Image 1 (spheres, each protein chain N blue to C red):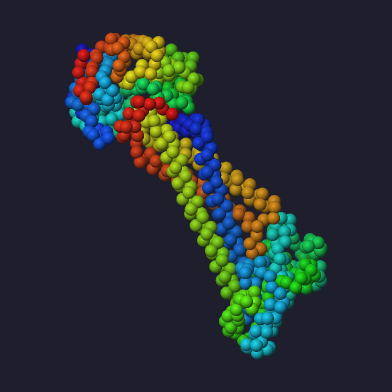
Image 2: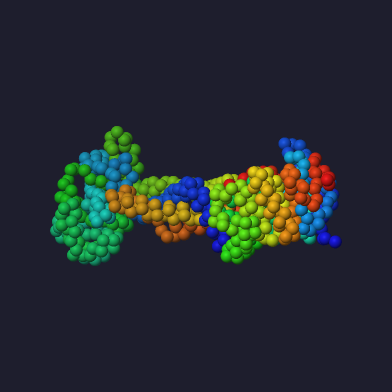
Length: 390
Length: 226
């Protein structure tokens, strides 16, 4: 039997069995959709894991204890004073060279989630090792710097103007920092207080210790402070980065498990679809065999039928995924640690899914028919001679 | 002397049913000439269908030798059996067994497509076969749109389209009213007489028995010539 003939046969069969085909396509498309979106989620999490605080070893970070990512934290100057008192009490006064409050907010500018950081420029330059690539540090309250990623995404250059919370700001410089792998606008702390209307709360606090006191020693001493005394946690900056990495690793592991489950589901459903066709059309298949069709030819028809269904499901799953992503984009996208969770997958993910689906289809069709050739079972033959096909 | 279409010697076939061993075909020997019209009668469960399976290369005998249309079926490989079914033998069933999703013409095309004919060549031959059974005007109808008699004639056309040397029919009139049965019998007789196709028919229909060149009774796996 020629390939095109087998293809036509499979198509006619699908149309005749339209209700069952639709149900199979819907279930497979749902699985494909989950697969693609979970691939996108892993990609987004990869983006988050690239962002990390880059402070010297002498810096301790304070964040609220119920948050993992900076944007979720909420602390006050009283919290920082509490820790400062503790350091002074336990190690003596004069060991802290600087107390640094940092504001971390997220805004949507032209549909793009942008992290707005409010921190003293001097601190950024001296402690956080933020590198200015172009332009100059802001000289007035109406100037900001943006990071390289935001410049790339928005096309903004030094001298461009744009509104932040209703204030017209001018880009005075473009910077690069491992703290903001995704789009970021950097204001001075005072500027951010002015823009946001300071309510006494900010996101992160940092203590810069003098060289005569070990940050590890201070951290070990302060971490034992009971939870009822403060709602904050104190971190060595690399510990904090580790904590973020651990949290992200958990998410990524979960996503990977989902992907494995989804692939198993895809295998099972594809096999099920092939086996169901075989079971439902047993007599028809025997009839083909009686009429001289070889096992290979029947296998080809079954393979093509299942492949058409799987490819159709894949196409629909792909379209639905793209639709979901775009609908999500039109509204305020969900963000994690200042990174938009766009769920955007790559062509490579589509190709891998497509290759796997096709392989599984071939495998399922083969296994379904390999398990038993109807002509090898006299009961099936008897059924054909005694009953109707259909 | 007319050459033999079927030569069977000491054919045996047993199978298990509900834990019991049934001797469906028990030491049967027969020789049927080419262009003959043979009828096998007997009670249900007597082994008629099993014998047809063996003659059609759908099943293999446990022992004995069987040669049909020059092919030694008891020694043939799976590939040879496929080829035998594709080229030498046509089947007609009591319940027609047409594919409901396909038109009459497409149903008739099936055996031709199995042997590798192109779609257009298969359609041409299928139309000729439909014409031979007097249904050229019903080519686009689906089985559900045809009467029982018409469906059986389409099934016969499907059996004939490969120009088989042998047609095996299992109760071809068993599901038809007397008028439709008469039409099918006339068609079988015409094909047998005019085209020299060998027929082996398992039936209880006395009318077919009366026109057959050979009549056998098969019960408890034993074949007796009547």
